[in-house]
Length: 417
Image (cartoon, rainbow, N blue to C red):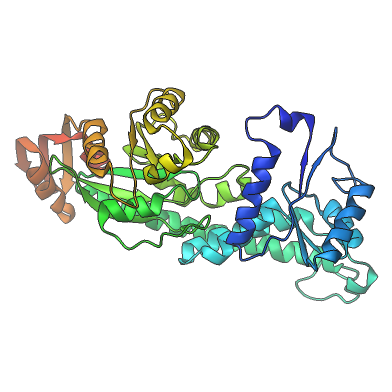
């Protein structure tokens, strides 16, 4: 169910397109879509979003089709959701709850599960509502606020405590991920990250490039947990390729915040491969939205290659791939564009050459280092990847001057003299 207002009609992404996307999300969550309803009205109704008459119509349709769930393509305040459930007689979800449910189903790693739970609790906390005197706690005791504490207050306190615990655990995850990133940076390999709208074919392309076995599925958000593999370019240069979660329009802010550790793989990359489903009529809108999300996480200035995927479907859709590539590349700030098919392998060689050409150079930088005896492995690292100009050993360690690749500087930061 979606509502189109005058403001929506002026937007690039129409309410009808958004409703179709909502249906795809529902199917990804395992639901069977039996009816899609689009309402046009001057403004949203404050009580039920759609108004009393439309609410009754939806109830009749739900009864006739034996539907047990109604999903709205809008974020519903707690009071509005309760009003709708009371009048429709079935369970009501909004777009954000649906996306959170999909993420909860797809998260496989401990990190992903913690991030989803944090997002769910952050969304639930302001929507807790009391359900009458039957839920009040009449007793007091140690660890409570005293006699008369309501069930609502207890739930809020428990949720806040759980949120605090999850954030502490995720901080440990971030430290662990930062350690892994420093270890990767110990060997100066650039990182190339895949980014794009959900269901654009990122995981299929990742598998094609690296020979990996990451789950690739036509459902939205089939991949949530980041995966990193090594990739050899035509110049024999080795890079790390990272597959990350897909973006989507109206991505809940709680999810953007919760997946901050995962999105760091995008912000820390040397080059972004912006994957676009070229066969989609909304390719330009998807491309624009991904750039908005990249701007939000501070990755918009990272060098990009626009990868127009699903070239095998372009002819069937009546789309000229080259002209689409030129248009989207212009809208993406002049980023180079490559048309490929991850499914058939068409254009992959050209993509690899483009990555090789667009990766930032790794110039040598002069450094002066003081390395303690306990970390002399760092000296070996400098000898292996750089050029030592001067080296002197003393009682406390080694002092050296060297020319090293710029990509090695983060690994050496703690030893700069």
